[in-house]
Image 1 (tube, helix red, strand yellow):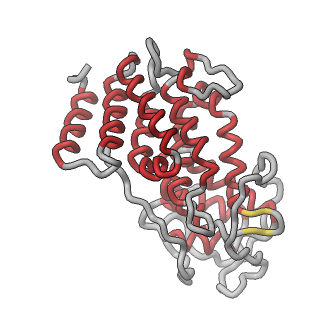
Image 2 (spheres, rainbow, N blue to C red):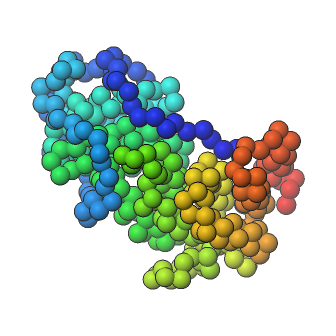
Image 3 (cartoon, one colour):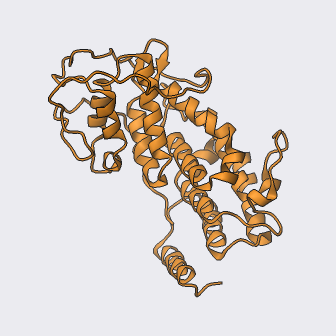
Length: 320
């Protein structure tokens, strides 16, 4: 696997043509927001950092000349996977969101729809995080989009141990989204969003095994739910997410938490040596160690070719 590039810029001036793939065609009639569809927000928005200009709710089409979108309209847009395509402009999604939001509950609903969609497929995490970053300017009253989003992330983080045991697919998607949000979100002073660092390392270590979970964690982690240490097995999909995301944001994490990164790499080495995990897992973890050793620089062609050939061998059953 190789590290992925990422977008750092904020949304520019809004495109006035909202037509694009992913259900973003302009609506011909004004819709009323549907009742009873509001997202659940878990607790106060403790980690909210929102320095952008708030969006004034649009109740009559506003200066864009676009009709106000109903909840049904917005859901059809955000629940369509084509909206998260690289070819789809996030500015158009933002424009639609501005024409939907009229109340605090609308802000929460918006965050919930995007977040839950990203948790269906980890491949949506990168583009989904870029869409969320473009919407950090949206707020109505005390409801800020970033705060609502982080409340949802925080709720799944608190339930991570149960999640990895009962729904490893959702956990993998959650971890991918968490890492991508960390990679793109910035404060007003252009610093990384540091409250996400500890949760990321906690989730990485949780994948490797219960013995690598921090000692101050209150809950016990059942070895049968996960693996990583001696005699246990690491979940293949979760491990691949760990490897891919570390190669993407590893440098950023190390710059802000060098000691935690060193401990994580030591845990990965231990996991490679001691675990009964599959060749696919050991190959992914070894790739991370090599990326760390070369300072997170992209691998050369020979190294990339080696891992590609090895992956083919593993998939075909030639590597045991």
